[in-house]
Image (cartoon, rainbow, N blue to C red; front, side):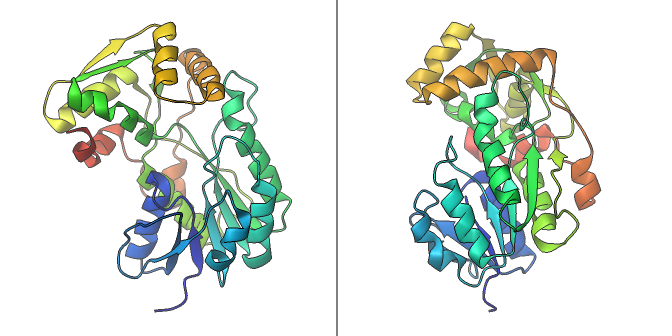
Length: 281
């Protein structure tokens, strides 16, 4: 088998894992950056490394042409050293950023590190693409334990509607950026197919798993306590709920960029729920 040319970070996560799977299925040599033991299909090479320790990346980057970069931290600390390491060995970086980059709306703290990562990559001399997705459908996996144990999802903002995007669609766009020149220097905003309220998301999960699941709206105060109890960092707690409240008035955009770039329409949230029935049962 040829030496892998594409390195995928976040390879054990939802989006990075989908990038690895789709590259492998297409017969494209791929290398996965991992911090510990991980199982991948035969032919996918796993290499140890940690983005929090830039010096650990040398072996993973050896012989690599392109990097799919998922930043797992809430600050850009160590990012200059990581981008420098990538720039010395690779020619292209495709960064998983956020639709909210550049916004001065509530929740800016969530996207500040994305803004800095984009700036560093653009200044690095690398060929680059910054993918700017709307909310991830996979974030609703945070409801999975409640769904399994109680059949009730307790959260604020029942009518909050978002065009949540399937990780497989993000991966398909990323692969176009990694393997063709069509997205060099682009910052495509990529979205799910349609706006779906949180209450409707729960109904679609219920439909997919074949048993009743209810959405129960809680107050903001209760939501704050839930997040703190779950161990979310204080800066995330302070940013997420105001950002969601703002989306009630100014929803995220919906577009057809996934179809324009990949040739296939974005998957629906209904499809995402079907694809993840095992997580909720």
